[in-house]
Image 1 (tube, rainbow, N blue to C red):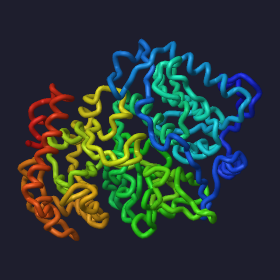
Image 2: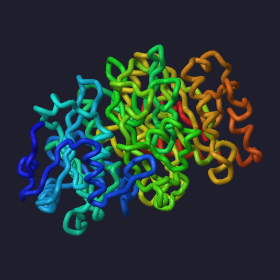
Image 3: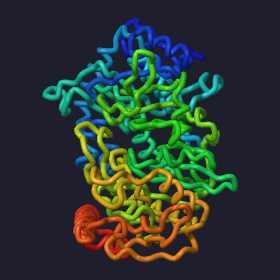
Image 4: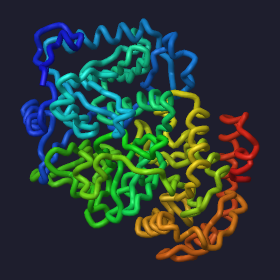
Length: 524
């Protein structure tokens, strides 16, 4: 494998560049540099400091001539001028002079027809360990002539000056689609690297006719793929890690004419409240080679997964091979079942409901959930949010590009679509417990097995979805939230309040949506 010099990375000085170090070597480097410590199972435990979640207000896209008319500019896809970007890049490269650097050359996209090559340059060995485990790892032959399609430079120690640099804080995530570069400054939260790669793929894949998706996916023994859409904290990782099915991937996928493929080569699981009994696959994946972020450990290295004192957004990053039933390579056939996951803090969305194609398109572009504490900076309690495509922060193109693709896929495959509420039912969050995971798993299992195809349904008059009257291994009375609320008047008021939020969001964001889709949503 060819070595790299700082000059080849565009960096002056005589710093040492470590390219594609082994996992043991990266762990050794991180420990020697004081970046972290071992857990009792051998995972590397690090604290990410001020930034313990993504910082969406600090993300910018460079407004260049070649991409200006393609990007859906706004509060999510914020522009930054090219000269500002170039100035920050020059200062970041100067900051990295004479420093030890860690480079990982890897792939995104498990289907070789659509693979993109990424070069990740890290200031920290621990972050290089993370991305080594999260992307797809090339073999020695593939590394010999590796030429990156995109380069990502992550320097947490470099702090921006907002007044001079034209950004919002000391942290900045800058995507330059024209020069195929990403700069990440000021934040040690490794999720910024992962999601920057995803944001690149969400620009590249649609141009190749591929629907890129913020989802998990798994596959059954008979080849039936299933896709789980949802924002962070709604259960994508948990529900896709099913011992009865093979995991394709836990967060990011492409959907081509051939089927579904994983964009990544690893998993990045939330682990607040993690218990071996409830989530054994994830619990046991946290071992040597894994990275734990912001998890409190005792003097013997034993993690306390219930402790959210640093953040509720504690994380574990590990290669997908650490999941015993992972599908390697991460590819599957055409999905038969699509599941939209939401965590409803109002407690009024049915635990499971079946959607026709118009309803599916409505909920896909709406992307409702309650944003959970810790996922982003400043979120300390559940907040109602509508995130287009169940992942608005990561999709640079007009939402209609992705929505149109999904509509065509549903028509072509005839896949069944379900909306599953993994949040609360019977009262507001904080007043009642969250939905039991065993019931949610039972509902998902029934949907995947086709056991809900022939049951009787009733149309919810407010949310305009089809609620099954029965579901195997689930008490029938909890399937309709009306039955669980003790105060029926409070239920009606709360449900209509949330339905009004749906209507307001949809009419303001999608005024030109066809009537058949606009009319398929909740009615206050």
